[in-house]
Amino acid sequence: MRTRLSILPALGLLFILALTNAVSAGELVRVPPGNRNSVQPPIPNTSVLRAKAFNTTYDEKYQKIVGVLRDDKDLMASIRKAGQAYQIDPIHIVGALVGEHTYNITIVNRVKSYYVKALAYSQSDFKFAYKDVTVQTFLKKPEFAPCNAFTGSAELWECRDETWDKSFRGKVIDGVTYENMTFQRAFFQPFFAGQTFGLGQISPLTALEVTDLVHATSGLPKLSVDDPQAIYRDIMDPDRSVIYIAAIVKDAIDAYRAEGFDITDNPGLTATLYNVGQPRRRAAALRQAADATGGKKLPEENYYGWLVNDKLPELRGLLGSDNSQ
Image 1 (spheres, rainbow, N blue to C red):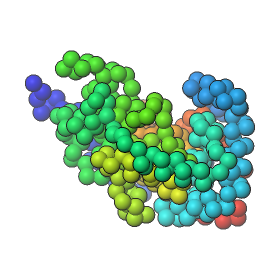
Image 2 (image 1 turned 135 degrees about the horizontal axis):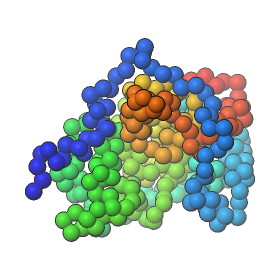
Image 3 (image 1 turned 90 degrees about the vertical axis):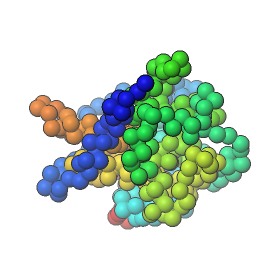
C-alpha cells in the first residue's frame, strides 16, 4: 500500500518551480546570442538514418525548407502574425521550422497539402492508450494525484510526463511491465512510433501542454484527451500549427525566465527546446546547476539549435526588413 509520503516526489522539480515561480529583474541572466559550442553537437543516429532512407542530405533538406519559407508569402505572414500575438521575435518560429525540416521530416512542396491530411486525421476513429488502458484511466493512478495541484495545462502535463518517467518508465508495477519509453510515445502515438504531425511536427502531448496559452491568446478551443481528433486537427492544420509553434516557444521562454534566464536573444536555444521539450524540468535543472559551485551557468544549444544560430543571418533575411516582435 502506498503512503501519502510515497507519492510526494511526483511533483519533483515542478513543485519547486511552483514555489519559486517569479524572479526579480535584478536576478535575470540575459543569455547572449550565438552558440556556446564552437562545433555542432552530435546529430542523433535516428536523424542520420532518416536522411539516408530518403536518399537526401541535411543541406538539401535545409535548402528545401528555406525555399518554401522564402516563396510562401502567406506562411511568412502567418509567422509574423503569430510572433506578434505571442510577443516573440518571429525568428524563433522560423528557427523551429528549419530545425524540424532539416533533421526530422522533409518539408512538402506545398504547405496547403497539410490541410488534406488534417481532414483525414480529424475523421479517424482512435484513442490515446497504452496496453489497452486509456490515458484517462491511467492518470487516475495515485502516483499522478499530486499533479492535480496544477491548474495550468503546461505545468499539469509536464508533471504527468515527469511522473511517468519517475514512477513507471522501465519498471514493473503490480505485475505490469512498462517499457522504457517516453510518456508521449507510450500514450500519444496511436498510429505508429516516432510520429509527430504537420508543418510544425508537433506531438499531441506538447499541444496539450500549451492549450491554455493558445486558448487565452488566440481564442482556439481548449484541447482534451477526450477528443483526440480535435488535437490532430489543430496540429495538422498549417494555419493553427504556426500558432502552436509560437505558443511552444513562448512557453519555453517563460519557463526559463521563471528560473532567472532570459533566452529571447538566442533562437538556437528556443529551437533546441522546441526539439527536446520539457522546458520547466530543464530550466529548473539549469538553475540548480548555476547555483552550485562550478556548475554550468548558461544553457547550451543542441545540434538542432546550433544550425539555427549558425544560419541566423540567412534565416533573418527570410523575414525581410520587418524583424520586430
